[in-house]
Length: 141
Length: 146
Image (cartoon, rainbow over all chains, first blue to last red):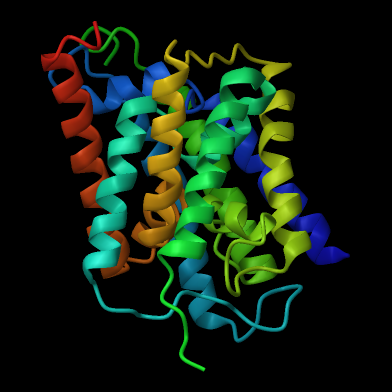
C-alpha cells in the first residue's frame, strides 16, 4: 500500500515536472537536438535540475541498507558496456530525434495531445514487444 | 540568456527538472527502484523479465499523464507533435526497440544513471544524444525540418 502510494506520487510529480519544464513539447526537445538551427538549451537545464536531487539520493543510498518502504534496493547490476547497450542507445536516439519525445514525455503527453501521443505509445509498445519476443536471448533450459 | 536563446525557458526547465529529480529520488529511496520509464512501461505491458512489481510500474506510469494534466491546469503546456502520423509511428517503433535493447532511456540512463556516474549510462546517454543530434541535423539538411 505504501509502495503503491509512493509510486503514484513519484509518477505524478515526474509527469508534472516534464510538463512544467516544457519537455513534453516535441518541438522544444527537437530544438535542443537541432544544434545547427535555432538551438534551445532548455533540456540542459532540465537535466541539471533532475540530476541534483538524484545525486543526493545516491549518496543517501550508500548510507542506508534498505529503502524506506521496501525490503531492498534494486539497483542495476554492473554489466559490461557492450554492443546491445550502444546499438540500443543509438537506435533510441534516432527515434528520439525523429519525433522529439522519449518514453516519459510520450506517456505524459497523453494528457495534452491524446491522439498523436497514443499513436506514439502504441508504436513504442510494439517495439518493446519485438524486443521481448525476437531480440531477447533465451535462457537455455 | 534570453537575448541569446529567445525561446529557452531556463528557469522553468530547471524547476521542472528538480521536480523530475525529486520524483526519481522518491522512487529510489522509498521503493528502492530506478524511475526508468521505458523499463516501467515494458513491465506494465508484461514485456520484461524482472523489474519493479507490476502495481508499482502501473501507478508510476499512470501518474505521468496525471501529473501533466495537473500542471497544465496551472501553466501553459504545449505538445507540438510532428504532423506526419507515419513519422510518429516509425519513431515510436525505433524508440521502443532501442530503449529496451539499450536497457534505458532519458530517465533511467540520463537522470538516474548519470547522477550515479554509471559508466554504462554515461556511454548510453552520450550515444543517444549524438544520434539524436545527427538525426535532427540530417533532417534539417534534407529539408524535412524548417
